Image (cartoon, rainbow, N blue to C red):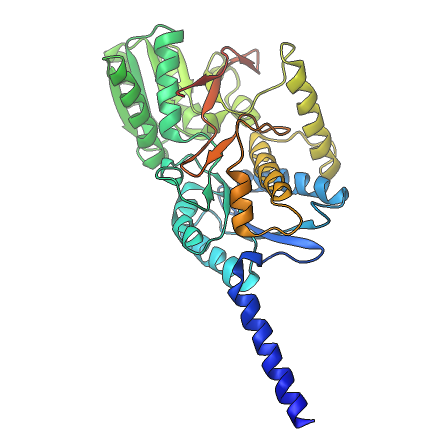
Length: 392
């Protein structure tokens, strides 16, 4: 009996160590694949995190209702990091070292994503889709990190190209948040304008928490540009646009894709009429019946989990994160490993899902999405005003 007990202990330890050594299979069980995400579900950015999580859950619920992928359902572990990178690091280490998740999918926020991307890459844990446009996520490319959203530097390039080539503007002003996002947008604009032998007509860095932008707008009016780019988020962009119009300044205004949400129109009202925005997720139009059918499918899937609710753009982002991961997991086959998932993602070549459009990865290219289009707010609705624009 004693010998049998000792043998059992040794066998158990052997199996434990053998499993621990094969970390490529962590999170994969006969009936499920366990993945993790971090979202701001409380605090000032909760509206974004809650929306993104709903989009992810809606897609995974739909997949699981069909029996999952290769016979396994998706089990999503959710941590609320409040968009605090210190919490993100703690939460992600717990996901990897205690929960043994197969992958991290759809993490929200530039500070947290940048804080954990190196750790996840070093530990061979796929990090699929980040709710961020930080160019550091894709440049240089990292083996286990797969950004999807256009990065802010790229967006700056495309905005400058649109204003010069499509709108024939030459005196382009830039108001940008005095933080990494704003600076990265400005860098892209400056580099693209340099290709046209131009530079921004005036640049104004602003504090996004300010309530009054009068002094900035007076500088802008004195410069008399022919167009303005606002690299800011919803609340501060609305305040700037409103005050510009209160000063009687009539100028074409372009702002960035984080603002392409119904909340921008709802909160901005008449003040944001005529504002131009970038977009990277198509919107249904009469001229695009194929995508309109896909959008209707997206809405049906979303409302199965959240009846009668109109999804936000943040929900669309979460939905895309879930469908990119799910398609790669399907391609990884019946016995998926982390490296198998990476190899599957690297086969994406202008891949289209339901909402995902033109997603590409290779071992040396982690840009994900590199094309955008432009839309204008007309009568309280987003109306496309360009085709797809890309640098490639």
